[in-house]
Image (cartoon, rainbow, N blue to C red; front, side, top):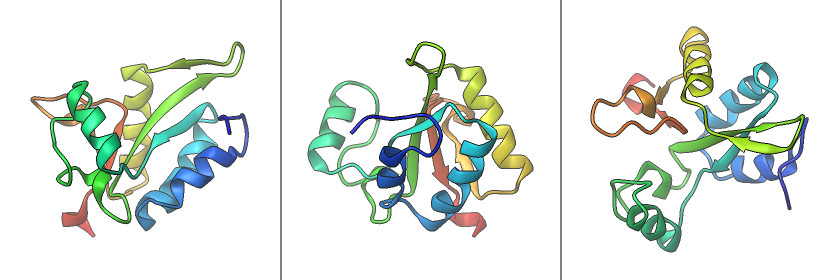
Length: 129
């Protein structure tokens, strides 16, 4: 299964493993940013080990919010529809983060972290539930 434009079946499948806050927020994000897609929500131990070993995560299994059921985080990316190329623009993620803040979603953006900027990362802010 591949990511597609419009209603993406792969994004919908990944969203099933996500926290209800992310399940509610993502369709609104997708409506505002149609080229936005989910690269991951839940990560099993193997996937978390890979993310840690490649430097994409600072946390080992089972300490990442991606390792919870339901997943407390989702990583996003952009597919430019004109040429189907994936993009990872910090400015694009900043616009999504601003949209989440404006709409009062209880979601924290990884680009706001001081030490480990993780622009694709959007995480449920449980302390604000």
